[in-house]
Image 1: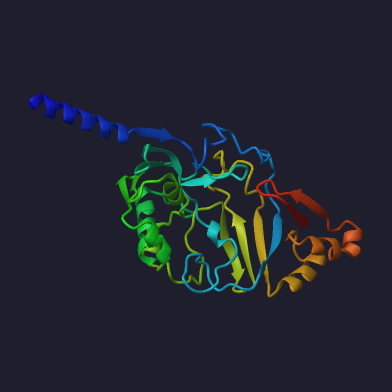
Image 2 (image 1 turned 90 degrees about the vertical axis):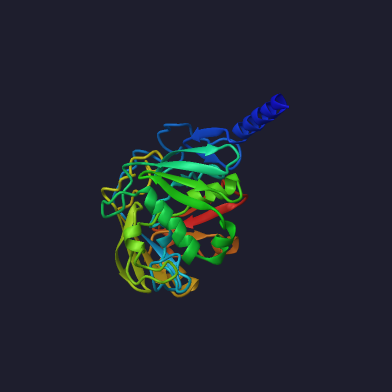
Length: 312
């Protein structure tokens, strides 16, 4: 009897150990393996030696009245969803692969019930303060208590805890790779700023952020100017090398697309994407096109059937 109990205990212990086999990785893919190996230099589609400088002016439609992409009311400004870095980021030449940004690496259960993420000690917000595991924990709680209801439904029972200054542990209520990777894509907020602001409320001024650009000027509802962060901590990471090259990105707002199109033809902004083949064939004409002041270019869309049409 004692032997049977002992054998049963050993069997259960072995099964538990197998079920909780721990893996380590620098990158993750929804399907298959990531395209880029550990210590890759840069994404294949970028020029790592691209010069930096200059300004590009783009258009946006409608208007905006705040700088909080996650507010439950109001119209956030263009590009505000890119103010914050995330733990991992994706590439543009493969579907669903995630590479370290704020994170350095991760160890996880092979059933994706939990993951521990190591944070890059160089990671910084724009004021120079470090990005810590506590900021990651705070961000998750902020989304759970003040974010959209759908987020709470998906991650009910999931926990995110700072277990060391630069290590965060995520335990998923429903183990699964896709839910884990979705959390890797969350922006990481600075607790010291957002503890005094509601995530559900609009912001009349730009928040403390961490991405490659910061908002440096604006006229509410009319334009926003982003300036490249010259001392951006992640500028030389493989996922960023050769990217974020313009010193200034400006968005000018137009009330409707027809007005924006006429402004583009006069050179008011620099790039316009066109997805309507009829418009491409009939509307992009005139002296500025004839003189090649505006260049028409067709770019094949590699991610799905079809083409992207652009005038610059």
